[in-house]
Image 1 (cartoon, rainbow, N blue to C red):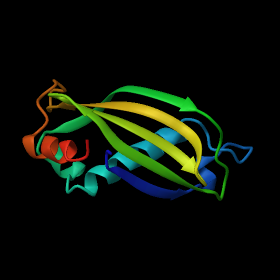
Image 2 (cartoon, rainbow, N blue to C red):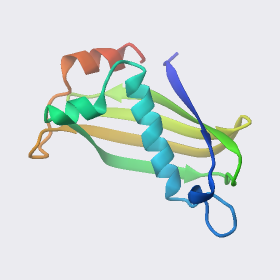
Image 3 (cartoon, one colour):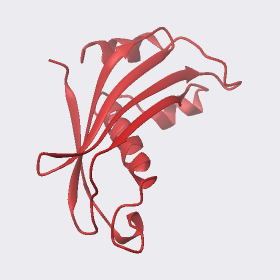
Length: 133
């Protein structure tokens, strides 16, 4: 089974709309944080890579909103790698609360250079991702 990374997040007021429900676009930030933590747990420093001219950009995103989170609740952002291509990494992410599915998503990252042209994912990163498949 693929290895999953889990990030617990408390929902703050700034995450919500006037009704105290998480604003739909703010889930994207939580998903981004989940992918960043996934990489960090594997020794991959996204900020350091950017300084070296290697970027991972979101090329594709699918999100199914199942139900909402509210102010003060704690959610879990679950992240796993689904597939690795030459220059792409495909993630499956969910956001849950008390084992109830709130968000289901698929995200494709593409590795690009400073000119935003696709390049091969560095071998060390590719190997780290491959261990989790």
